[in-house]
Length: 110
Length: 117
Image (cartoon, rainbow over all chains, first blue to last red; front, side):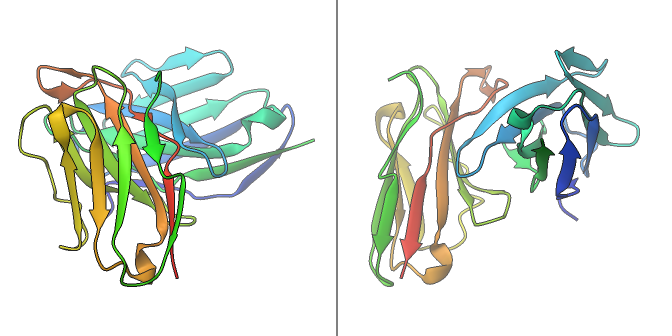
């Protein structure tokens, strides 16, 4: 079983829509959780960390459910510029490996 | 520079040749990672360096792959006798650490796109 699993999509949504991505992780000892964004033919960049209590950054909300071992990302009022691949990333904390999901592709349509 | 710098940005080579890819991390970052990303795939961990500790080489796919990090800064990933399946984007990332553990965000370079003909 993969460390991190994501629905690859693609998700095609109209501008202004709300879209949610989920991600599951296999190791219950995982400590740190992140969402990265990767534009086409570009390097990944941190979108936001995911905290146990959930956190929000503008139109983006991240949630962590440790009991079910999943992480979610909610994007409200989608913009064309949100079109990208969103990577779920997990770190065990004691080690130093970051485990990346294969990414969920989002296209926001005018 | 302000960010992680990688070179070359693109490399086309013939099967069987050796290639070297270079990564210059953010100044002061003691943690350095190499990843590989094939077309349409996720990031595959290759190797991790942390300060003067022995590197974590657990992700290297074969003994044709090796990496070193000189002086705790610049790193070179070497692929010997390249094969077509080595074609991918090789990404380097660096991070600061606290207590020897990577602290939070990974900063990626723009990658080196390798094509093996």
